[in-house]
Length: 286
Image 1: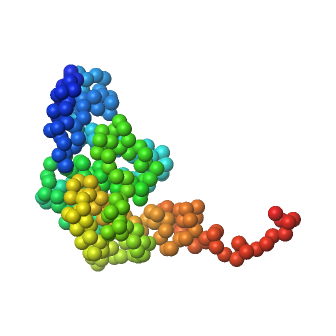
Image 2: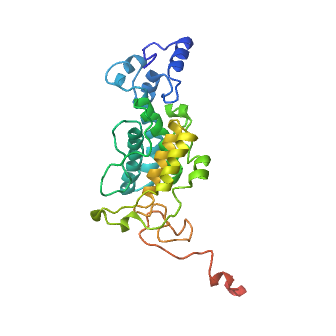
Image 3: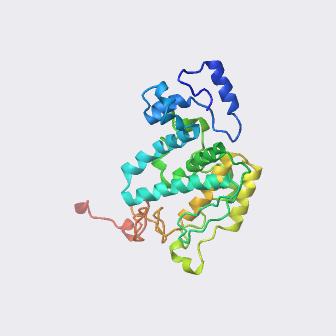
């Protein structure tokens, strides 16, 4: 890490460091020693340059900062069984981002009980840790509105180091205009209705796969676009794994007060329609 010393670098030295980390696939430079003090609790800059703190580089700090923005919303708002589901999705977004920036790693599809690795939709040709981490941050940000919207404000907010990446929260309008949404065709048939023993599972639509690959190559060839592709594919599978994560499985149309995420039932009651709305009550009952 550049300028990772007990004595803070001057502005000139910091400018040199920033210039060395300004590539499209680079993690932006920041004062990693100061970040170790803030994020890891090192008691001083001097201590932050010694074991065990010195082992945390820029990419460790970026991941830690991103997770710090997600964990409170997960632990404060959901029961333990759902907490593990959220953290599993984040882990898979990170893993698939890493796989997309590798030569051989395989991607994982959320909820696929066969546990078979698959070829990533896109391999960037990059293999650096910077590329992996930067893509992962963009992938998490792209998926947030679909699984943890309440954390969108805290995720990558200043002073978290990933704030420097300015990731797009949600899917890019240009992507959805060209390729649609992971919600297309949802709820449809959930993965739970397929038979993994027989080798059948929900298959990502080939036309969407082709569109995502083309969009990344033509419109967004950097890590931000790759993160969007990673998030889109993983979200598509997550919505169809039988957990009713959006509350809409079975065609529930009653709105968020009745179509609760993860509900086991499939309530069909819609308070906005029906004969009762036409009833005129006598004044004595009002």
